[in-house]
Image 1 (cartoon, each protein chain N blue to C red):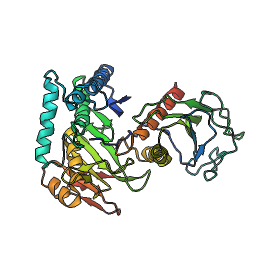
Image 2: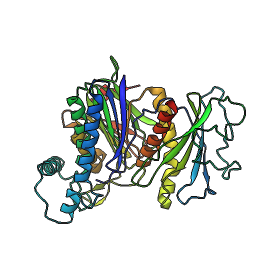
Image 3: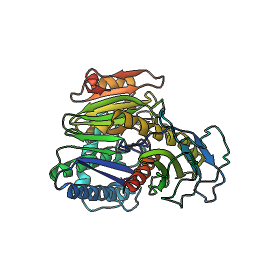
Image 4: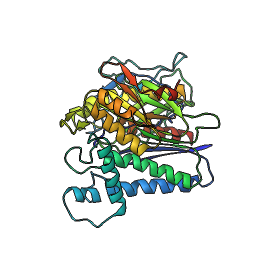
Length: 173
Length: 247
């Protein structure tokens, strides 16, 4: 059966986020539309930055996937030097690669940028416009409830989580 | 201390969490190699796989493993009066059995390497063995098909399998072989059983049968429980499902 349901395990610990979703149509690469997903940190003082979820066009510079392990340009000046951005491995999915960059403040994830996701068809874009924020929420829910695995989700979601996990793993090294 | 591995294979991602037994790395390595071997043989996306060649009507050398998989598919097809089909779109495609079986193979190889506890997730299907840690059973979230990012229910247990069939993000992707039309009676249906291959295949069948017939059918099968979310948000469950509910 061509079953498009699939899922990730909820092993992305340390993830607390929730988000606004902004397509950047100015990204040069063909497949590299960038979504910026800013996070908030459930109540406590988040290093909230340019997270204006409802703004369709974004004034800030496009996120550049080529600068891993550098201080995040978007977390402003209020946070500490512990802030760093790590680019996850591109995870292959049936519909195309998914790659994220994760910004950490210490061990806490404060921002996730989706650098690449399938956009071959209008259907892909439609799906990803909600699959990606859904995954952020799942990651958050999973962390809070100590959930070991998830039954039911999507391929892209899996790729997202895989890239996210690899970024977390790299940050921990 | 547990070990974790994520592998992209079979058009999806498999995640393994295993207890830190001595030979854990060997067990995971063997399991991952097995997944790729199964993919090479059974993929419907690889033109050179045995299944693709059979689907095109080419002659293939007898393969005991392929024969066994097709036999299991035929069994489930008979069990479910055709609601599960090895030719869901008219073309040979045993994927509805193969993914779950591949997960079982991972579990078997991990156990062979000494693992007593592990959780294997492949494309939304879960096989759990042992417990997450001493005194804590594994907990699996059932994604809510209607409310993005939320769980419809949390289930926990020590040795069990969880499979969900749903409309999911790709639209009406499960067809009722009886009508040839998309099965839309459920938003999603989740089955709990002992082993994931049959649990997953039955979940596909129950989804195709629809709520009335499907839930009555699974209720009559010992060892399986079901939880369904209907398009309007109502939920239905079999008599023993509540025993797995947690959170």
